[in-house]
Amino acid sequence: MSESSGLVARQRVRRIAANDSAINEEPDRNPHSPDADENPAERMLGEDQTKPDGDQHPVADESHPTTDRHPEPQLAHGRHGTRRHILGYVRVSSEEQAASGLGIEAQTAAIHAECDRRGWTVEILADLGRSGKQVNPELRRALDLLQSGQADGLIISKLDRLARSVQHASAIIDAAQMQGWDLVVIDGAIDLTTASGRAMAQMLSVFAELEREMISSRTKDALAARKARGLDNGRKTAIPAGVLRRIVLSRDAGASFGSIAQELTDELYLSPTGLPVWHESTVRRAYATAKAKEAAAA
Figure 1 (tube, rainbow, N blue to C red):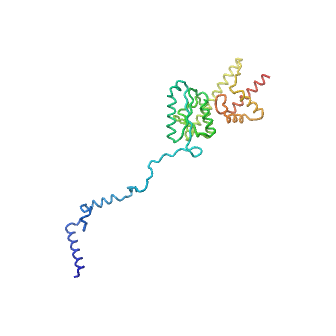
Figure 2: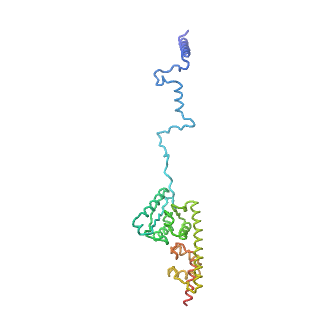
C-alpha cells in the first residue's frame, strides 16, 4: 500500500471513532479558536441572530451620515415664497389696562405663540386706551399695510379686539377676502387660511347683514314716529364736507353710486360709521340728502 493510501485510511478510521464516541460533536475543530468550547447549537443561534430577516432592521452604516428622524417643520410661505409676514393687532380699551400692560402682554404672548407654531414672522401693532367701536389708528395702519401688500395677514387674540360689532368685523373680513390677505382669530373659529374658518366668516357676514337690516328697520320706525308727531327728522351728516361734495359732483357728472363707493374705499376714506368699506346705498343716501337740502335752501 502506498504511503498516501495509508494516510487516507488512518484519517477515515479516526473519523469513525470520533463519530462513535460523540455523534453531536463537531469534527476537527480548531482547539485554539475562540469558539472551541461553545456549543454548536448555541453558535448557530448566535449566527442567526446576527443576520437580519424580514422583521429586523439592518444596522445603520456609521460611515455615512444619517438623516434627521425629526426634520424641521416646513414653514408656511407668503405671497412671494418667503416666510409669511403677519401683523399682530392688540388693543385695550381703558387707560388703566394700558398703564398696567397686563392685557397687552396676554394678547401679545398668545399672538407670538401662534405665529411661532405656524412658522410666521410677526409685527405687533397696538391701540392703547381705545374703544373698539371704530377703526382705531393702528388698526387703520394695519389695514393699509395689508391692502398695499406689505403683509400676508392679520392675527388677533379675540374677535372683540378687532371690533365690537358684528357689522364692523364683517366689513374687515370682506376686505380681507377681496384683497387676498388672511385673518386669524386665535380663540375663535375664524381662520381664513382654512376652509372651515372661511365658512364661519361667511356665517358672520350673514349675521352682520341681519343686524344691518334690523337697525334699518328700527331707524325707519323711529323716523316715522317722529314725522307723525310733526318733528324734524333732519340731522347733521357724519360725512366730511369735502367727501360729500365729491359725491355730489361725481354723481352729477354721471358716475354711478357703485363706482363712487368703490373709489372712496380704494382711496381709504372711512365711511360715516367708521368702516373701511363704502356701500352703494350709503353713497345714494348721502347724495339724496345733500340734494334735498340744496333744493330746500334755494
